[in-house]
Image (cartoon, rainbow, N blue to C red; front, side, top):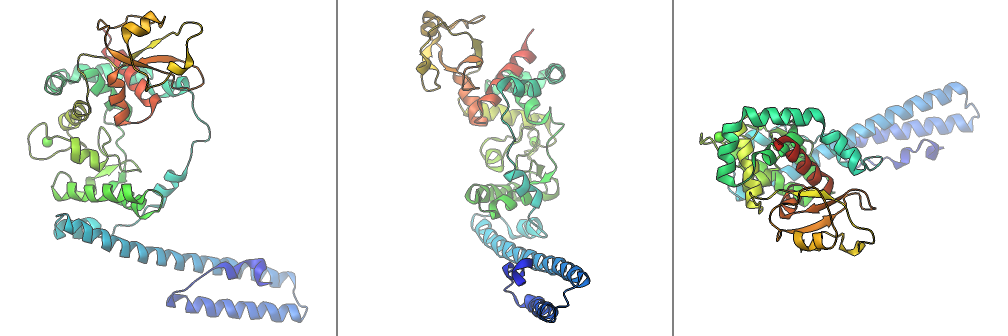
Length: 365
Ligand SMILES: [Ca+2]
Protein backbone atom coordinates (compact mmCIF):
# COMPACT_ATOMS: atom_id res chain seq x y z
CA UNK A 1 0.00 0.00 0.00
CA UNK A 2 2.76 2.42 0.92
CA UNK A 3 4.36 2.21 -2.48
CA UNK A 4 1.12 3.22 -4.19
CA UNK A 5 1.50 6.65 -2.67
CA UNK A 6 5.26 6.66 -3.10
CA UNK A 7 5.85 8.16 0.34
CA UNK A 8 8.80 5.92 1.07
CA UNK A 9 10.66 7.69 -1.67
CA UNK A 10 10.55 10.94 0.26
CA UNK A 11 13.74 11.15 2.23
CA UNK A 12 13.93 13.43 5.16
CA UNK A 13 17.01 13.26 7.31
CA UNK A 14 16.95 16.41 9.37
CA UNK A 15 15.66 16.68 12.96
CA UNK A 16 12.91 18.97 11.78
CA UNK A 17 11.51 16.02 9.89
CA UNK A 18 10.83 13.93 12.99
CA UNK A 19 7.28 15.19 13.19
CA UNK A 20 6.84 14.44 9.51
CA UNK A 21 8.12 10.87 9.99
CA UNK A 22 5.87 10.34 13.01
CA UNK A 23 2.89 11.58 11.05
CA UNK A 24 3.82 9.38 8.11
CA UNK A 25 3.99 6.31 10.38
CA UNK A 26 0.62 7.11 11.91
CA UNK A 27 -0.90 7.55 8.46
CA UNK A 28 0.39 4.19 7.23
CA UNK A 29 -0.84 2.28 10.25
CA UNK A 30 -4.26 3.93 9.83
CA UNK A 31 -4.37 2.75 6.21
CA UNK A 32 -3.20 -0.76 7.19
CA UNK A 33 -5.96 -1.06 9.78
CA UNK A 34 -8.53 0.07 7.22
CA UNK A 35 -7.27 -2.44 4.65
CA UNK A 36 -7.09 -5.34 7.07
CA UNK A 37 -10.58 -4.63 8.36
CA UNK A 38 -11.74 -4.50 4.72
CA UNK A 39 -13.24 -1.07 5.25
CA UNK A 40 -11.33 0.66 2.48
CA UNK A 41 -14.22 2.82 1.30
CA UNK A 42 -14.22 5.63 -1.23
CA UNK A 43 -14.13 8.06 1.70
CA UNK A 44 -11.01 6.41 3.11
CA UNK A 45 -9.33 6.67 -0.27
CA UNK A 46 -10.25 10.34 -0.57
CA UNK A 47 -8.76 11.00 2.87
CA UNK A 48 -5.66 9.02 1.90
CA UNK A 49 -5.18 11.04 -1.27
CA UNK A 50 -5.55 14.35 0.60
CA UNK A 51 -3.16 13.28 3.33
CA UNK A 52 -0.67 12.16 0.69
CA UNK A 53 -0.76 15.59 -0.94
CA UNK A 54 -0.24 17.18 2.48
CA UNK A 55 2.72 14.93 3.23
CA UNK A 56 4.32 15.66 -0.12
CA UNK A 57 3.94 19.40 0.51
CA UNK A 58 5.50 19.10 3.97
CA UNK A 59 8.37 17.06 2.54
CA UNK A 60 8.92 19.57 -0.28
CA UNK A 61 9.03 22.40 2.24
CA UNK A 62 11.56 20.55 4.35
CA UNK A 63 13.68 19.73 1.33
CA UNK A 64 13.64 23.44 0.37
CA UNK A 65 14.80 24.22 3.90
CA UNK A 66 17.70 21.82 3.43
CA UNK A 67 18.56 23.46 0.08
CA UNK A 68 18.52 26.89 1.71
CA UNK A 69 20.81 25.68 4.49
CA UNK A 70 23.33 24.19 2.06
CA UNK A 71 23.17 27.32 -0.16
CA UNK A 72 24.07 29.43 2.87
CA UNK A 73 26.97 27.08 3.71
CA UNK A 74 28.17 27.31 0.11
CA UNK A 75 27.85 31.10 0.19
CA UNK A 76 29.98 31.26 3.34
CA UNK A 77 32.71 29.53 1.35
CA UNK A 78 32.36 32.03 -1.54
CA UNK A 79 32.60 34.80 1.04
CA UNK A 80 35.92 33.43 2.31
CA UNK A 81 37.29 33.29 -1.22
CA UNK A 82 36.12 36.87 -1.91
CA UNK A 83 37.81 38.15 1.25
CA UNK A 84 41.00 36.35 0.27
CA UNK A 85 40.91 38.09 -3.11
CA UNK A 86 40.57 41.49 -1.46
CA UNK A 87 36.82 42.23 -1.42
CA UNK A 88 35.92 44.19 1.73
CA UNK A 89 33.76 42.70 4.48
CA UNK A 90 31.50 45.72 4.29
CA UNK A 91 30.71 45.05 0.62
CA UNK A 92 30.12 41.36 1.32
CA UNK A 93 27.88 42.02 4.31
CA UNK A 94 25.64 44.16 2.16
CA UNK A 95 25.82 42.19 -1.10
CA UNK A 96 25.37 38.70 0.30
CA UNK A 97 22.73 39.59 2.85
CA UNK A 98 19.41 37.97 1.85
CA UNK A 99 20.96 36.51 -1.32
CA UNK A 100 18.83 33.58 -2.52
CA UNK A 101 18.91 31.33 -5.58
CA UNK A 102 16.39 32.22 -8.31
CA UNK A 103 14.46 29.14 -9.56
CA UNK A 104 13.57 30.95 -12.83
CA UNK A 105 17.29 31.23 -13.67
CA UNK A 106 17.65 27.43 -13.51
CA UNK A 107 14.51 27.05 -15.57
CA UNK A 108 15.93 29.36 -18.27
CA UNK A 109 19.27 27.56 -18.13
CA UNK A 110 17.57 24.21 -18.75
CA UNK A 111 15.16 25.29 -21.45
CA UNK A 112 16.30 24.35 -24.92
CA UNK A 113 14.79 25.90 -28.03
CA UNK A 114 12.27 23.50 -29.54
CA UNK A 115 13.62 23.90 -33.03
CA UNK A 116 16.67 25.49 -34.53
CA UNK A 117 16.13 28.60 -36.60
CA UNK A 118 17.63 28.90 -40.05
CA UNK A 119 19.94 31.86 -40.66
CA UNK A 120 17.21 33.68 -42.59
CA UNK A 121 14.67 33.14 -39.83
CA UNK A 122 17.21 34.43 -37.29
CA UNK A 123 18.08 37.47 -39.42
CA UNK A 124 14.37 38.23 -39.87
CA UNK A 125 14.07 38.46 -36.11
CA UNK A 126 17.29 40.31 -35.38
CA UNK A 127 18.02 42.57 -38.33
CA UNK A 128 14.57 44.13 -38.59
CA UNK A 129 13.72 47.34 -40.42
CA UNK A 130 12.86 48.99 -37.10
CA UNK A 131 16.24 48.04 -35.60
CA UNK A 132 18.00 49.43 -38.69
CA UNK A 133 15.96 52.65 -38.52
CA UNK A 134 16.61 53.04 -34.78
CA UNK A 135 20.31 52.33 -35.33
CA UNK A 136 20.60 55.09 -37.91
CA UNK A 137 18.87 57.45 -35.48
CA UNK A 138 21.32 56.51 -32.71
CA UNK A 139 24.26 56.93 -35.06
CA UNK A 140 23.05 60.46 -35.79
CA UNK A 141 22.11 61.28 -32.19
CA UNK A 142 25.49 60.20 -30.78
CA UNK A 143 27.62 61.13 -33.76
CA UNK A 144 30.17 63.21 -31.81
CA UNK A 145 30.59 60.61 -29.08
CA UNK A 146 30.84 57.77 -31.61
CA UNK A 147 33.37 59.66 -33.73
CA UNK A 148 35.60 60.22 -30.71
CA UNK A 149 35.26 56.59 -29.60
CA UNK A 150 35.94 55.41 -33.16
CA UNK A 151 39.14 57.49 -33.35
CA UNK A 152 40.36 56.37 -29.94
CA UNK A 153 39.69 52.64 -30.34
CA UNK A 154 39.82 52.18 -34.09
CA UNK A 155 36.34 50.67 -34.44
CA UNK A 156 33.83 52.06 -36.93
CA UNK A 157 30.77 53.62 -35.24
CA UNK A 158 28.25 51.42 -37.08
CA UNK A 159 29.72 48.24 -35.55
CA UNK A 160 29.50 49.64 -32.02
CA UNK A 161 25.92 50.72 -32.68
CA UNK A 162 25.02 47.33 -34.23
CA UNK A 163 26.26 45.47 -31.14
CA UNK A 164 24.38 47.91 -28.92
CA UNK A 165 21.22 47.34 -30.99
CA UNK A 166 21.41 43.56 -31.01
CA UNK A 167 22.41 43.17 -27.37
CA UNK A 168 19.85 45.46 -25.74
CA UNK A 169 17.86 47.26 -28.42
CA UNK A 170 20.06 50.34 -27.92
CA UNK A 171 19.97 50.20 -24.16
CA UNK A 172 16.22 49.61 -23.85
CA UNK A 173 16.33 45.97 -22.72
CA UNK A 174 19.21 45.48 -20.38
CA UNK A 175 17.60 42.74 -18.27
CA UNK A 176 16.00 42.91 -14.85
CA UNK A 177 17.56 39.95 -13.06
CA UNK A 178 19.68 40.85 -10.03
CA UNK A 179 23.11 39.82 -11.33
CA UNK A 180 24.55 38.63 -8.02
CA UNK A 181 21.64 36.30 -7.34
CA UNK A 182 21.57 35.10 -10.97
CA UNK A 183 25.25 34.17 -11.15
CA UNK A 184 25.16 32.78 -7.59
CA UNK A 185 22.26 30.53 -8.67
CA UNK A 186 24.23 29.21 -11.64
CA UNK A 187 27.43 28.87 -9.60
CA UNK A 188 25.62 26.92 -6.89
CA UNK A 189 23.91 24.75 -9.50
CA UNK A 190 26.14 21.94 -10.75
CA UNK A 191 26.08 22.44 -14.51
CA UNK A 192 28.64 25.26 -14.94
CA UNK A 193 29.69 25.95 -11.35
CA UNK A 194 33.31 26.84 -11.97
CA UNK A 195 32.61 29.44 -14.65
CA UNK A 196 29.81 31.14 -12.72
CA UNK A 197 31.65 31.10 -9.41
CA UNK A 198 34.38 33.13 -11.10
CA UNK A 199 31.71 35.46 -12.49
CA UNK A 200 30.24 35.83 -9.00
CA UNK A 201 33.63 36.77 -7.57
CA UNK A 202 34.13 39.28 -10.39
CA UNK A 203 30.67 40.75 -9.72
CA UNK A 204 31.59 41.18 -6.05
CA UNK A 205 34.79 43.00 -7.02
CA UNK A 206 32.83 45.34 -9.29
CA UNK A 207 30.58 46.19 -6.34
CA UNK A 208 33.56 46.62 -4.05
CA UNK A 209 35.10 49.08 -6.53
CA UNK A 210 31.92 51.16 -6.27
CA UNK A 211 30.93 51.16 -9.95
CA UNK A 212 27.30 50.27 -9.16
CA UNK A 213 25.22 49.28 -6.14
CA UNK A 214 24.11 45.68 -5.60
CA UNK A 215 20.49 46.82 -5.94
CA UNK A 216 21.14 48.35 -9.36
CA UNK A 217 23.43 45.65 -10.70
CA UNK A 218 20.86 44.11 -13.04
CA UNK A 219 21.23 42.03 -16.15
CA UNK A 220 20.12 38.97 -18.06
CA UNK A 221 19.24 35.69 -16.36
CA UNK A 222 22.80 34.54 -17.08
CA UNK A 223 24.43 37.63 -15.62
CA UNK A 224 25.16 39.72 -18.75
CA UNK A 225 25.07 43.34 -17.62
CA UNK A 226 24.25 46.77 -18.92
CA UNK A 227 23.75 48.30 -22.35
CA UNK A 228 26.25 46.02 -24.10
CA UNK A 229 25.65 42.96 -21.91
CA UNK A 230 29.08 42.34 -20.42
CA UNK A 231 29.60 39.38 -18.15
CA UNK A 232 31.34 40.46 -14.93
CA UNK A 233 34.66 39.03 -16.21
CA UNK A 234 34.38 41.01 -19.47
CA UNK A 235 33.59 44.08 -17.41
CA UNK A 236 36.78 43.52 -15.44
CA UNK A 237 38.85 43.05 -18.60
CA UNK A 238 37.38 45.55 -21.03
CA UNK A 239 34.96 48.06 -19.49
CA UNK A 240 36.19 51.66 -19.39
CA UNK A 241 35.27 54.87 -17.58
CA UNK A 242 34.93 56.95 -20.72
CA UNK A 243 33.59 60.14 -19.14
CA UNK A 244 36.19 60.00 -16.37
CA UNK A 245 33.82 60.39 -13.43
CA UNK A 246 35.54 57.56 -11.53
CA UNK A 247 32.82 54.99 -12.15
CA UNK A 248 32.40 52.55 -15.00
CA UNK A 249 28.67 52.73 -15.53
CA UNK A 250 27.75 50.48 -18.46
CA UNK A 251 24.14 50.47 -17.24
CA UNK A 252 23.26 54.15 -17.49
CA UNK A 253 26.14 56.00 -19.13
CA UNK A 254 26.07 55.64 -22.94
CA UNK A 255 29.69 56.84 -23.29
CA UNK A 256 30.99 54.27 -20.80
CA UNK A 257 28.90 51.51 -22.42
CA UNK A 258 29.84 52.20 -26.04
CA UNK A 259 33.53 52.88 -25.33
CA UNK A 260 33.62 49.60 -23.39
CA UNK A 261 32.21 47.75 -26.40
CA UNK A 262 34.74 49.43 -28.71
CA UNK A 263 37.55 48.61 -26.29
CA UNK A 264 36.44 44.96 -26.24
CA UNK A 265 36.63 44.79 -30.04
CA UNK A 266 39.91 46.72 -30.25
CA UNK A 267 41.60 44.52 -27.67
CA UNK A 268 40.30 41.43 -29.46
CA UNK A 269 42.07 42.41 -32.66
CA UNK A 270 39.63 44.62 -34.57
CA UNK A 271 40.89 46.23 -37.78
CA UNK A 272 39.28 49.66 -38.13
CA UNK A 273 39.89 49.92 -41.87
CA UNK A 274 38.15 46.64 -42.70
CA UNK A 275 34.59 45.42 -42.69
CA UNK A 276 33.36 42.07 -41.39
CA UNK A 277 32.80 40.14 -44.60
CA UNK A 278 30.27 39.89 -47.39
CA UNK A 279 27.80 37.53 -48.98
CA UNK A 280 29.17 35.63 -51.96
CA UNK A 281 28.23 33.02 -54.54
CA UNK A 282 30.30 29.91 -55.14
CA UNK A 283 31.02 28.61 -58.65
CA UNK A 284 29.64 25.24 -59.74
CA UNK A 285 31.72 22.32 -58.56
CA UNK A 286 33.39 24.34 -55.79
CA UNK A 287 35.41 22.14 -53.45
CA UNK A 288 33.24 21.87 -50.31
CA UNK A 289 36.26 21.18 -48.14
CA UNK A 290 37.20 24.83 -48.57
CA UNK A 291 33.98 25.92 -46.80
CA UNK A 292 35.71 25.96 -43.45
CA UNK A 293 36.59 28.82 -41.13
CA UNK A 294 40.05 27.33 -40.70
CA UNK A 295 40.84 27.69 -44.39
CA UNK A 296 42.11 31.21 -45.08
CA UNK A 297 42.99 32.64 -48.45
CA UNK A 298 43.38 36.12 -49.83
CA UNK A 299 40.43 37.76 -51.57
CA UNK A 300 42.47 37.61 -54.73
CA UNK A 301 42.81 33.84 -54.49
CA UNK A 302 39.10 33.33 -53.76
CA UNK A 303 38.18 35.50 -56.74
CA UNK A 304 40.50 33.53 -58.96
CA UNK A 305 38.68 30.38 -57.86
CA UNK A 306 35.42 31.88 -59.07
CA UNK A 307 33.96 33.15 -55.80
CA UNK A 308 31.89 36.18 -56.70
CA UNK A 309 30.05 38.90 -54.86
CA UNK A 310 29.11 42.53 -54.99
CA UNK A 311 31.95 44.99 -54.46
CA UNK A 312 35.00 43.18 -53.15
CA UNK A 313 37.10 45.44 -50.91
CA UNK A 314 40.08 47.27 -52.37
CA UNK A 315 42.60 45.19 -50.46
CA UNK A 316 43.13 42.04 -52.56
CA UNK A 317 45.43 40.54 -49.94
CA UNK A 318 42.83 40.55 -47.16
CA UNK A 319 42.66 37.05 -45.68
CA UNK A 320 39.19 35.54 -45.59
CA UNK A 321 37.40 32.26 -44.97
CA UNK A 322 34.24 30.92 -46.54
CA UNK A 323 31.46 30.23 -44.07
CA UNK A 324 27.96 28.82 -44.43
CA UNK A 325 26.25 29.44 -41.08
CA UNK A 326 23.35 27.09 -41.95
CA UNK A 327 25.88 24.29 -42.46
CA UNK A 328 23.97 22.25 -45.05
CA UNK A 329 24.32 24.75 -47.87
CA UNK A 330 22.36 27.93 -47.57
CA UNK A 331 23.79 31.44 -47.77
CA UNK A 332 27.55 31.76 -48.15
CA UNK A 333 29.80 34.49 -46.78
CA UNK A 334 33.41 35.51 -47.01
CA UNK A 335 34.46 36.21 -43.43
CA UNK A 336 37.26 38.76 -42.90
CA UNK A 337 39.44 38.89 -39.78
CA UNK A 338 36.92 41.18 -37.99
CA UNK A 339 34.33 38.39 -38.28
CA UNK A 340 36.50 36.33 -35.94
CA UNK A 341 36.61 39.26 -33.53
CA UNK A 342 32.80 39.31 -33.42
CA UNK A 343 32.91 35.55 -32.72
CA UNK A 344 35.05 36.31 -29.65
CA UNK A 345 32.17 38.44 -28.37
CA UNK A 346 29.65 35.69 -29.12
CA UNK A 347 30.61 32.35 -30.65
CA UNK A 348 27.50 32.10 -32.82
CA UNK A 349 27.96 32.44 -36.59
CA UNK A 350 24.36 33.65 -36.82
CA UNK A 351 25.20 36.41 -34.34
CA UNK A 352 28.34 37.44 -36.25
CA UNK A 353 26.52 37.63 -39.59
CA UNK A 354 23.67 39.59 -37.98
CA UNK A 355 26.06 42.14 -36.43
CA UNK A 356 27.84 42.50 -39.78
CA UNK A 357 24.68 42.94 -41.85
CA UNK A 358 23.10 45.32 -39.31
CA UNK A 359 26.30 47.40 -39.21
CA UNK A 360 26.35 47.57 -43.03
CA UNK A 361 22.69 48.62 -43.12
CA UNK A 362 23.10 51.23 -40.37
CA UNK A 363 26.28 52.63 -41.91
CA UNK A 364 25.02 52.62 -45.52
CA UNK A 365 24.83 56.14 -46.98
CA1 LIG B 1 31.97 56.89 -16.02
